[in-house]
Length: 400
Image 1: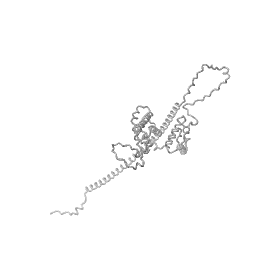
Image 2: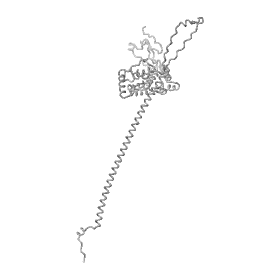
Image 3: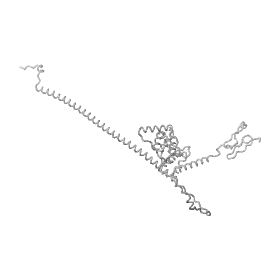
Image 4: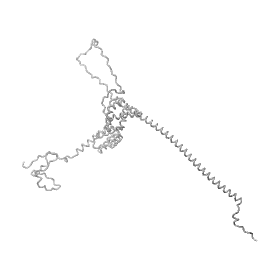
């Protein structure tokens, strides 16, 4: 007899075994632990990011501090450099003043008057008896008072008193040429005598008029407000006036004119003095070699090559200019002699214009180009043709 079959429902509702329950509990525990571990890993990553952010912030703050320190050091260095620049500028100005004083002393030594020549020798006549003074006459004359000897001024002492020459007035014009001309005239007066620097400044300021006087008052006001030192030398005053009355564009224009200057229609000496004038206005301290090269480069083509060859034989620029001037005159003389006299129009008193009666006569027959022209006869009313390099012929008319 076969065993009875179990129902399917009873199989589905079968209770799990204890081993299965333990496995399921372990699985759930492991999944819980895995989720917790994942959460911890996420938290650790977030903490690491926060740490990185804080580290980068600290590094950035440290870099900012380093940059601030560098900026402070650079500011201190710039301040030191400005102080050194001011010191160098003042030293250079002092050096220029000393050089100017040395030049003035040298000029005063050169211009020192020479001692007067001894009196001329006068021979005594042989027949004239010698004049002797008796002791009585000598005793009767009262002794002459001692002569006061005026102490002579030393060459290194500045002159005092009124200027020996009048300075030109300056009105503060906006034309740089007029200021430069005024400056050169004042320099010329100051170079003739040795005056103190403060006296030069006061003498120049006393000639300010209109706009120049207004400008000087404004300069003094601003310098007192900013605490700047006073102008005590003529060189400082010239430098300050050039900054105000000579524009930078004008100086650039002068440099371009000096660079592009050519002789053109000028004479050699006019061209040379134009070069000197531009160089003086720009206050260029060029050597003689540079000035010589500039002069040769600006000459006309017919003078440039021979003058450049002759430059090796002369000792100074003035000798070279004299040679160029002589060469130019010789060239013009040869060109004037090369003009033929026959090409000049005849300016005699005899007129070659035909008379009204002859203009109504029939025209002359055509001539071949090789047939010489026959002179007109007096019967036609035409005057004879004048001959070149000969006095005008006497005109004879028909019926006379």
